[in-house]
Image (tube, rainbow, N blue to C red; front, side, top):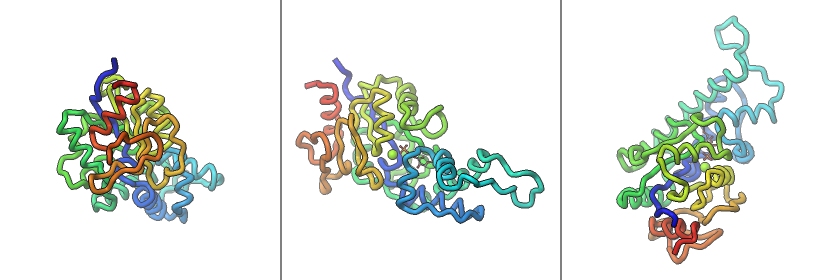
Length: 269
Ligand code: XBP
Ligand code: MG
């Protein structure tokens, strides 16, 4: 007999908020401009680069594909040799994080439809909340702090984020870390994702009760193995549409809908 639903593990980028196109992307571009680089990541180019998760890894991928001859410039005012490529990318990414956090503080990106409602329902019912994300921890904190719910960050018992694991999504490490910190087996949890990399990561951690809410960059991706794919969590006045799997009569993703998906994923009555 499988355990009832005890926790929900959420991805952040694309899932809690549609952060990539108008949050991360302009933050990267602002960091490039800061250091005098004429690189500009357009909306379509960024869609390609998103295949690689993690901001530092994404910059390295861009260099490998589009600027193979790039040599980091010496630090301004310094006579010393150029920094290593790794050190240059780390510094560039640090600037990117500063821009991103400032944008979140300005409330540039709202939470997606239904996110706050579902978090409230879960919290009120004693279902535990966790995060498993590739993004830098400060980015998560800044996004949650910008929500119209003071202290939202503290609703999450576990925030597994960024470089704390050896391999980022699609590797299962970050979901495995969240499960270990929750001290729960995967069968006691549901996961919510928006991307194929996230789906592979969650499934790799044996999270079969897996809901996908597609986001602007991920609509066309392959979510094979997810229990249910919807356009959004939705609200009572803004219903969800199932893109794969069944909503089982629920108009939007309420906690009861998630529990029903979880039971079904484990073939429970
Ligand atoms: C999110 C990411 C992140 C962000 C950037 O993937 O890939 O890398 O784009 O974050 P997921 P950092 O939603 O699957 O976790 O720049 O802080 O790395
Ligand atoms: Mg995501």
